[in-house]
Length: 603
Image 1: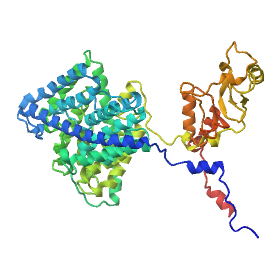
Image 2: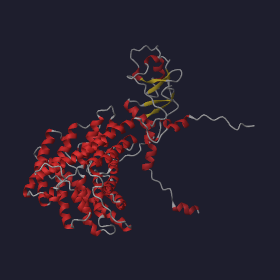
Image 3: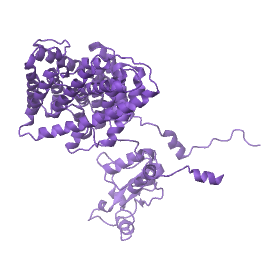
Image 4: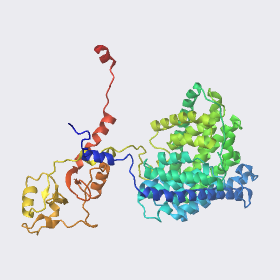
């Protein structure tokens, strides 16, 4: 009679490895970085409060000659033609700050943050954290047609980086905290935490991993919760449009194409203007003042084009301005924004883009069928933003976060996607990466799962390993393995119990070594200065490849576990290359799986 309870089979090594594998890499340091991100989020809110206060203060000083932190629009001034000289003065001050303080305050902040992340090991200085909000407050307060988001991204990023530099962290962890500070500042300025997280994913992090995503989420939510303590709560531009119909879909496509075309034009024109400034026979310190001349002239004829212009955005979204007024405002704002930014002054791009995009929607609105009249300024605003940033999800959710208009979410997504597709097909780089490319650094913004991450060492290792016994003499080893019939450049050396002693190549032998001495004399016990390098079967091929690159190895031994170090296989560079075969098939191999003619013949 058979046993009703047969003995349970022991799981195979493959089953054990399968049980240990995870969807995500789990590192306990994630908790530490997330706790630091709480502090970074609070500091981001504080930095936003300071920046907004500086903008209000300098606006009152320049336009109303009063020491006040009250929010006032530059358009309310009564200076007449003297208003032309205010942006010039602001440009002179900022030029001096950049020349004798830090050149990194020039520009709108996001490219500088990206450059620090990708090419500067996420190290930013205290000078930037102090001088960026100060210079931006001067520029915007003197009438510069910019927003606060670019400066706060740079300032918040500098704060996150500085905090990280006080801890024993890796460059990747420092990057996470830099981005956490940047997006926390953006959250505090606009009250859009989800859009800020998406901005990190689409533009700043260059990866989608728990180690970076979770701290960014923590910092943004902390900034969102603390924002009402220092700044206004609720959406900046509350709006509620009507329910959309099927005809709205076609209008959204048109709006997206127009938004993408305007984005491409402005991005191209901006760097043409920057090229013209580079041809001037004077030091770049004077360029912001020259740009300020055009800002002042434009502001004299169209006062509402000066400054951040949140009041203008609100009027455009609510259709409070006539089309003729909007056309003039749109042209002046676009021209002075491009001239000022091309001069290398300090200021953000999002607020001007919101005005320009909303103005485009106001002009197109009467000709687009379907949808509420208030919908098209909002939709075009998101489309222009998506085209310029190359970040459609950020643009759509950002516009939604500014208004909390749930009915507009679907049109926002479609128009942003169309504008994004337009610029991807027609432009090589975005406004965010062109400046970095001109400095000699190319950024490839697409990223996906590395094929080396999808396979593990035990799946590609070779189990048929040619190893050398450690008790073999040096002379016999040289003759047998490093003679004229040498098969591999290096070999693993094992003891009597098949435990790994190290890797042996021709350079390991001392020229004066006694050929009668056992091979084991070459290998000393592993220590911190001479670590024993190997791979584990459950590690990803990416980890193995990184280890081989850092130790300049062509072959990497695989051991059963880090305690016993029993040799079970070896991985070579050619084995790692094979992991890309499936990637090549997916990307390049075209096949038709359904052939109607074949189906007809089979019937």
